[in-house]
Image 1: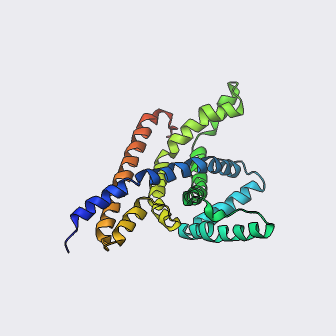
Image 2: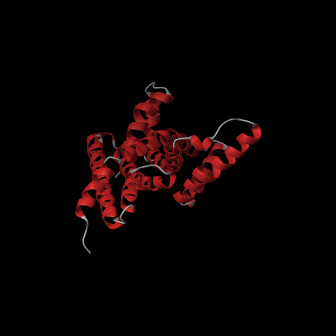
Image 3: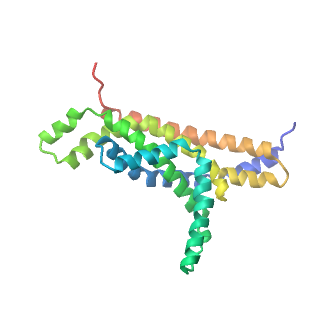
Length: 236
């Protein structure tokens, strides 16, 4: 089998132009998901009534269902139901006019909020409670003790798992083409469909994701080295 190298280069450049879309989905999803994940982690740690059960139910649902199913529910089923309700209510709102990338933000944010909740919970529990109590004894308020003592150490502890989660999210964004979002995968597949050059297109996608995930890994490694002083010391 001979590869169509001119097509491969052309498709690579087109897919490269879609990298910002993939990165935008990744960053937006993480920014939206982080506060929700953090709140759910606190609800679990401090056993907040009702909220703890609700967050655990949500986490179990997200972890127990494939992301493709979550996409179909949020992108296909939910808009159809809402559109029907809006018509019955007499509202001139067509939810299908929404930019598809908004659905991508929502799906990946909701999915990663559950994953971040578990990540934050384990990271917060890794910080010695004595440090928080010592900060309170030194006169810091509970909020300042958390912000200045607990959170920096928890975030450094969470960095390796956060790196894995981010890389997984980057790869999962390839499913955004299901929602007609023109990300790396969608652009390459559309270009390949004209002459059935799918092998070349998939090789382009492979190379781009290897590069993006490699750079992400490098940046997280640098961040972990930079903030290693904040990492909690384990007792011997």
